[in-house]
Image (cartoon, rainbow, N blue to C red; front, top):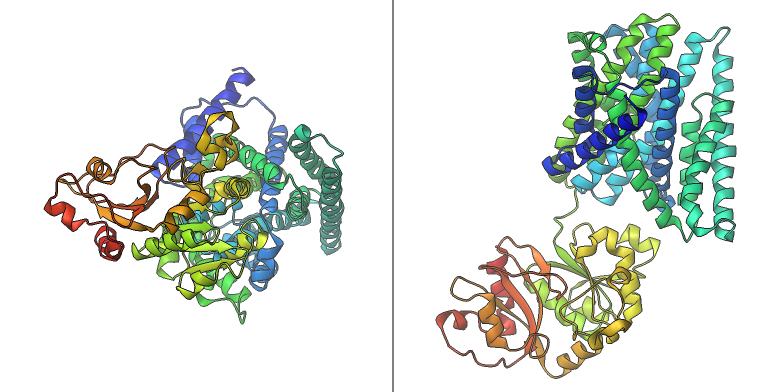
Length: 624
């Protein structure tokens, strides 16, 4: 089979598996491994005619880019906030987990001592490629999510390095503790020089504009691979530690291009994960899978229920971490691509070194990956909610810009039973909100402080409502990836009301809230004229069309603000997205205090009279 055909098969199977996993709400790694096994040992469709050593080197390059992208996600602010826990998880927990894992592999799984110690080191890793998607799905609070994220990313290279040094100790002639110390020193030196210094030099060049903009992202990918290759020349497999350090350094430098570089790496990581989790399991053989027995099953249980809880318990003993975080960490430890790639590297090498039972290494690791991903992925959200570590349900509005009109809107939304937060950089402008008991955030919404201090996980929509159209657009673009661009809105711009080619394109702004006439000045003018926030509840006998007929011309006689579904979900109105509410919705709109009389009075109209004081009652009916 031609290599081009093989590559297309791998890419097609990998991305199709990612899509299928998203549809059926399963961790993607499980579907990917199943696809790899189906294409490899089950059907034999996928056969890579490449020497194992060369394939292993290519896998290492892919893992290096994945770890670099993870390192870029590590923020110094998170470490300062929960550093006491991160230090214990990355310095104390790995040696304990290695010791317990090695003992369990020998006495429970029946592996020889050299293979057991290598396996114990491999299982130290907790898989950021699995942890990060699970955290997004479970919606943990920021502190708990930071602990799991830092542990997963930092412990990956630590576990690989432990496996390398253990492998060298048992396989290299004249090796001993001196060789171990030399190898550890070489790895740290390589990480400091190529990762730390190399990352800083890269950021310095990018900041000075030494590299053209269109080359920065691809050039960074090449530099990451060079860092990985150069570090491995000093100490075998030290490259993974170096690229993690490089990502940490670049991710925390104040680079203008940081977000664009991170998005490029994220997209590349999705493709690499899809490829690696198809390729690695496809290389397994039925003979290897047949070596799994009841002792392996018992070993997996011990890893989940003994090794991980004891390691976390000892590492966090006497620490100021919350009891709930300790319990969560004691259970959650899914393994990912680094564990699979490491087993694929060390298994064949140990067999060649004279340890035939190392052939069981890769299938054992795959069983642990599948079991931990399923067990932890399916229980993380439920466990976090039960212990109070999960963010609240995503249903609310963040208003950027404090004004008289935004105060009126916040009061109305709060009466509907929906969470609302008003953010502004002026303490004085926030005073009326604070006096009214509305939750506020004092600070710049675009700052790193806001990113870490503002709890947006429970908020579903963003409305930028300052008097500066271009600041609104900037804030919408900056926060679009957090809320989803389809739920990011700003007040209509002044040029938008006139239409034509002068209006900002949608790619440079958020969706226009309400209607093209709803500019900051116009809304404030209507508020001064006595307009109020009002509600009407739709029913089978009083639909949205009838509401429109009663109120008059939308955008002139009244402004549709949004609504609350019968299940209590909040929705913000925009003329740029098609939507038609159904029976049971509570509609929120901005209109004159004395609405025009209905054309045909009815009992339903009486129940939905446009009076501001009915908001709380209608909101209770709609929200319940």
